[in-house]
Image 1 (cartoon, one colour):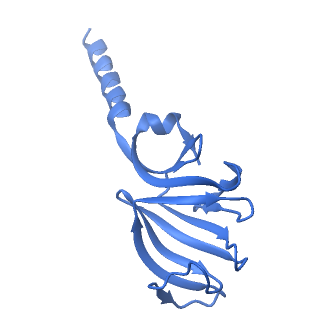
Image 2 (cartoon, helix red, strand yellow):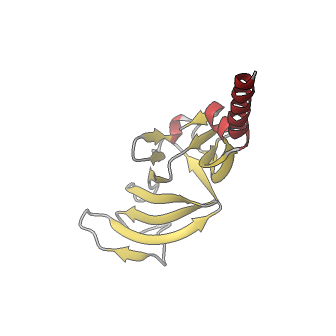
Image 3 (cartoon, one colour):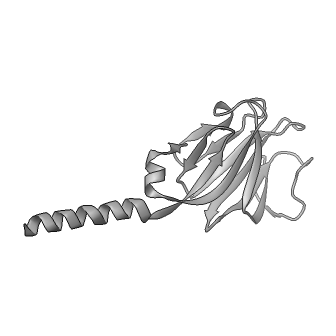
Length: 154
């Protein structure tokens, strides 16, 4: 009887943990689907529509915001930050330190722009998850562990 009580209590604690424990994720809201990214850092990469050169932005998950830490591009043109600090480099790219927080990021995804998320372990071709020129909203959300386990992961 005493063992059943302890086993039942332990199961209840595990169940409560799964139901109540919340964790931060980077959430990608596509038109019909929602995906979660657990990593704390990622790069957003695309081909600029005017310069036809690769553009990279480096993000960190900080509390409830996306922190744009750095951007990297080959040529100055439309959309280049005007207040970033230039970081010296020899790789043919202009590196700029930005450190700008965003509560939400709205992104248009297309195969033409090759919109891609890169983490330490994987490359995610966002344009394969939606139709061309659809919007994706990227936010930091705190979700229950069970939501993450049963949800779509990038």
